[in-house]
Amino acid sequence: MVAALTTDPQGRILLVRKRTSQVFMQPGGKPEPGETAVAALRRELQEELQIDVPEAALDPVGDFTTDTANEPGHVLHSQVFRLHLDQPVTAAAEIAEARWFTLAEADALGDRLAPLARKLLPRLAEPRMRHSVRALILDEDDNVLLLRFRWDNPGGVTEFWAYPGGGIEPGESALQALQRELREEVGLELAELGPELWTKTAHFPMGQWDGQVDHIHLLRVPHFEPRPGFSEDQLRAEHVHEVRWWSPDEIARSTATFSPRSLPTLLVRLRDEGPPDTPVTLTGF
Image (tube, rainbow, N blue to C red; front, top):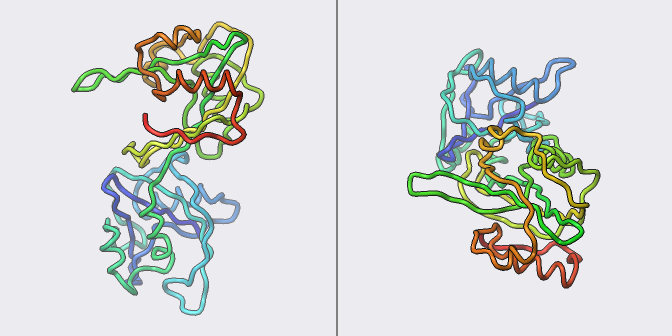
C-alpha cells in the first residue's frame, strides 16, 4: 500500500472514508504491477481526490506495518509519503467523504480512525524541518564568496549576505544538492563535500515546512570569477541580487548584515583554529 500523510497550511490532516466503511484513513491505495510507489500514489490521489500532485511534492516518511482498518486479522504494509496541500479536494471513485481534521478531532474519532492514521498522528506534532546544504567557499587568501539576498517587504527591505547553497530536494544527496546549487548560483563544479563546519536551525513558517536546518561545509578553491549558471532573472527569483568575494579585512570592517550574524567571528576562529572535529551548532539568525 501507499498512503499520503496530508496536511494543510492550518496543520489539519486530510482523511478519507470509503463508501463501504465508517473508518477514516489516509488517501492512497495499492500499486499496480510495474508501478512505482510515487506513481501509484499520484494516480490514487487523482482518482480519489481529483488532484494532480507533482512528484517533488511527495516526501518519503517511511514504511509502516499496522493492523488493517477493514479486514480483522490481517496486517497492512504501507509506504507513507508526506504531502502539504493548499487546494480543494473532491471525493471521487470509492471515496464517500474527504474531510480535514485537527489533530484533536482526528484523535477523537476513536475506533473510526484507521490504525495507520492513528500511528501517524504523533508525527504531525513534530516540526517538519527542511534540510539545506551550503558552502563556505574560501580561496587561497581566505577571501570568502557570498551572495546578497534581498526581500522587498511591505514593512521595508530585508537584506543580508550569506553563503551559497540551498534545500536538498527529494531523492538528492547532500553532495548532489550542493553541486546543483553551486552550479546555478556561482558557476562552480563541485567534486566532493568538504568537512561540515556548522549547523544552524531556525524555526519559522515556510510553506509546507516549519523551519530549516542548514548544514554548512568548508570548500577551499583557487580564486575564480563567479559565473552563475542561472540568468539574472532566475537569480532574482531566488532573491539573489549580487555575488562577490569578500576579503577578511572587508568583512571585519563592514556594517553589512551577514547570516549568521556571527560570521566575522566564525571566520577568524576558523582561520586560527582550523575546522572543528564535529560540526558546531549555531543559534540565532
